[in-house]
Length: 152
Image 1: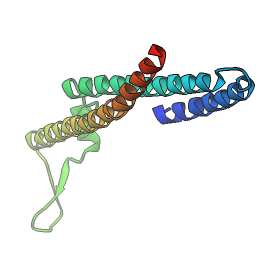
Image 2 (image 1 turned 135 degrees about the vertical axis):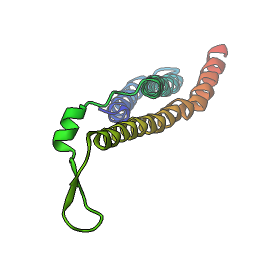
Image 3 (image 1 turned 180 degrees about the vertical axis):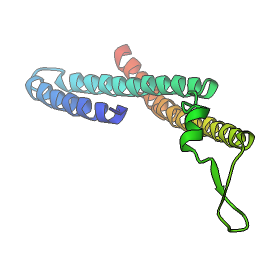
């Protein structure tokens, strides 16, 4: 389940609760200020959750870059399923690969898979930084708004 699919229902429920609370408190003195405070806390909570989720994603992506998952197919399995035969350049049948050539192909495939995992982790790292850096200014802005309201 992604972060967005969790935050959307939480935000909808919070908005409904704000509307209900606002309709009941509106006739009391200071009801509008209460709704504004609840809204500020809701925005702070949402942006904080986004930044925490992004931070977890940054940590996980960094760990995948540092220590990518190992390649799981063994050389014996590769030999069995990977094709010991290559087409003959002259167009007449096929040539069976030697163990050295097959091992070189296996090592190349394992290295390319490791590189592919690292590239995916770098992409994930970049996206996770977005989940941290984009809500940060919103969080800071609303935190200052809340501090001003509490000083008054």
